[in-house]
Structure formats: structure tokens, C-alpha cells
Length: 275
Image 1 (cartoon, one colour):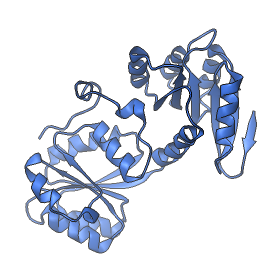
Image 2 (tube, one colour):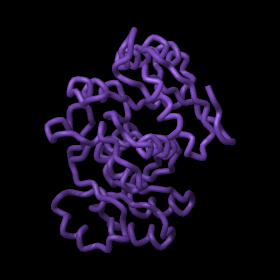
Image 3 (cartoon, rainbow, N blue to C red):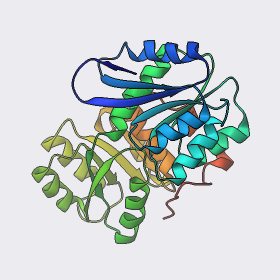
Image 4 (tube, rainbow, N blue to C red):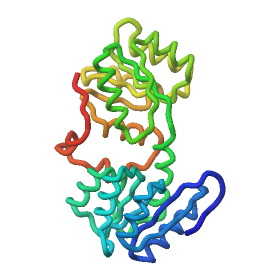
């Protein structure tokens, strides 16, 4: 066990029966400026016991350990309500294990050998995903707002969501509270999406805007200045699309476990918006 740097401490567990792998991850983490309390486990039963305490923020877990597999340890800890941010590791990528890892809410799946930079990207992404972000959702349809709100709530990101029923209310609310991200419906009566976008930019040039629209508006969106918005979601879209847009918006490494999916996988466990 060791503690690095200063400031708020993150509890990190490294579970692998190889001391070489554990040391590699520890040395990679030492390159960060984050205060970390590092704890090691050499087998699956110890890993489960430690996870079950619920005291770990992040864990790197090998799938193939003696006494209990990493997947079984993760599965049992999830049944206990443990929500630790998990990266799994293995010498190869087995489709069955990948699918189970997704279902159990693991964030990433590393195939050995991996790089120190990969380890550090997990730490960086954890900070970005767990930071609370003020979000404004703008749509004139109550039914659509309800569905999109649920989609956003299922995001990997921690989003504090406020709603506006039209462009005028959106500009008023944003003037009162500078939201970091605005999800803006492009096709609205009254003050249009284009006018609302211009008003948001005028009040807060740094706001990040995700446009929500139908494929029929693609030509209009593509005619806009690339600097006027950060992402666009074409209906129907899924939680995974929101997560990908936010990862790219904030310059985060895309976890292969989450985003390396085939089209037929896409809707299996993600809520879809139909309009």
C-alpha cells in the first residue's frame, strides 16, 4: 500500500496475480499528479473482499486470477451494490468476456501488453466523468424532453440537468446559470434553434453546444460554422451516442470496451430516442 502526491486522495486497487503487472501499473500511476492510495491484490478472493468494502474509487482487475476470476469478483461486487470504476485486463480479448464486462458496467478492457499512457488515460477520464457538469436541455416537446432527460441520466458522465421549454426560456436560464453544456433542439417554433444558438454564443462564447435534430436538417447543420457547436445528435440516438459526443467534446480517450460495437449491438442495452 502506498500514498502518492498531495490533495484529495483517490483509492485505487490493482488486482493481478503477476507482481510485474502490478508494479507496471503502480509506476504508471506514479507519473500522475493525483494523490493516490494504492492497494494490491494477488488473487480473485482478495480482490472481491477488497471491492466489497466499497472504499475504492478505481480498480484495475485481471480476468484470470487464482481462487476466483476477475469477472466473478466484479459480478459479486456489483450484486452488493459496489459501483467502483473498473478497468479489466487480460492477455486476449474473448467476446464472451467482453460482453459480460459491458453488462457489469466495466469502463475499459485492456489487452496485455498495454502502455503506461493507457493507465493514465483511465485516471484522466475518471476525473472528467465524475465531475458534476451543469447541463441545459432545450426542446419544445415535453415528451421528447422526458425521453432525452432519461437518456442523459444514463450517461457515463455526471450531468446536473435543467430543462427549458423553448429558446426564450433557454436564454433566460442560461443567463442566470452558466451551464457548461447545452443540448439544443434545432427545430423549434418561436425562437428557432439557430436563433437560440446565436443568443447562447453571444451571452457565453465558451458554452459547449450539442445540437439535436433530424437527418432532414443535415444540410443546414453542415452549413454552420464548425466553431458554433461542438457536436450534433441525429434522431434517433442512444445513450452511447451521448457518451461518445461528450468524450470527444472534452478530448477524452474513447474506451474501446464501450465504443467498439457493431451496429446490431448498439441498441441492446441503451435507451433509444424515437421522434
